[in-house]
Image (tube, rainbow, N blue to C red):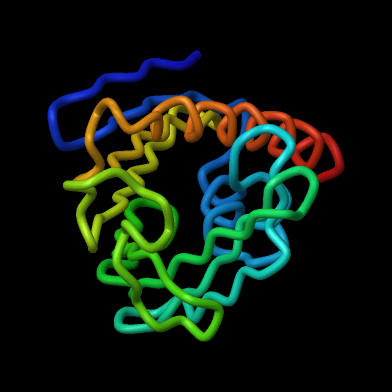
Length: 165
């Protein structure tokens, strides 16, 4: 199940997974799991450094299928309520984690320097409802499509991992 809603300055996506909230939480907070699903179809995540604590830093590198383009983002964890709520900031960055202007990364004019991702998880009798809000992202930026492709990969990984438990 997938639902995407866009407002002028946020992308909101709801998904339901056939897995417990603790597993979906791990997919967001364990770097090795995160690397396996994050990014659009065909993209890889060679770097996912995540200090998952309030005030902890994150540095992510997403690479295009042929590896010719690498997009680095950095941010900070703002809220951590295990298995329920995760909030982090996100900014374009260089590979050392220094924030750079969105235009230096090829983003259109007006793209914000800092955005915020909120992930809400709700237990539905062993299944998990996830609502992800990427605030500050222009609705017409294509981010919703990229997130949906990532969440398709997440659904496959959750199903495979839940089956192994």
